[in-house]
Length: 360
Ligand code: OGA
Ligand code: NI
Image (cartoon, rainbow, N blue to C red):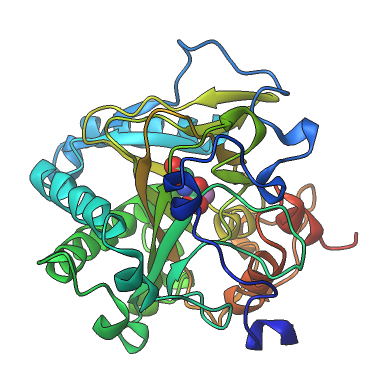
């Protein structure tokens, strides 16, 4: 795991600068092998979408039948999709618009201003343009900014952007709301798994959960058919709460070996199950592969908030979900250990969680 203590294996090139250079061809480093290109696998009918769940009754705890309906919808979505979008989640739409705009404006700042936050594979915090430290790897068509929100010990405002104005306050407010939402979703998942309401939150470390934000910036691409904004992967953490771009589609979810392009509802938050929930649920819920395609017309910004277990607790299938017929599928591993894989090798479909299968 040593090379994470060093720097990137090659000089970093900002994808934004490639895009803005106006060059009509992309460098070969971004050209994906044929089977990985956006059009080489089947894309589902444009009418198909991930489920949309109205969770307004989150705030009406006394209404049991409404709560039951939401529980059932979330249960179906977790079992059949691993991905869904929630509307009426209680986060102010203006906050969503403001934080999206602030991050858009951040990426529009001069490169020297952003360069101050240039990241390294040691912690990944800051402004980055690759995931994984393998020399010669084929890269994705995106830049990003990664920061810690929880635990408080890792939260460091000096590592967050100082501009545009108010961006730190917006991240604070959005983080607080998203963490509340993540906690509520974990309750729904726990109940749906037949566990006590607080089970997953407690297993995640109670008040000591981890939460971090990855803001993705996908610049326009002159040859979008040859590359991906983000290669196929499942999210390594617990739950992901994604604020997608409100104008530009790009996220695709794998379902029955076809790619479905997500059509976000206005002000929806997209939720997906990460590898840690797959492990904890003993694969009753499975993390799902997803990727991002780019286009030549419009750039795209998305905010992925990762709600993760405390990083040094071994995560393993819940004892309550292990039976003689369904033995534990995974050996225990801390999230710190788990995360090293993606941090070294970059996005690799579901190969990581599949490699965890205990030898039985
Ligand atoms: C991610 C991710 C999707 C998107 O950051 O892990 O899957 O739409 N992002 O940017
Ligand atoms: Ni993801």
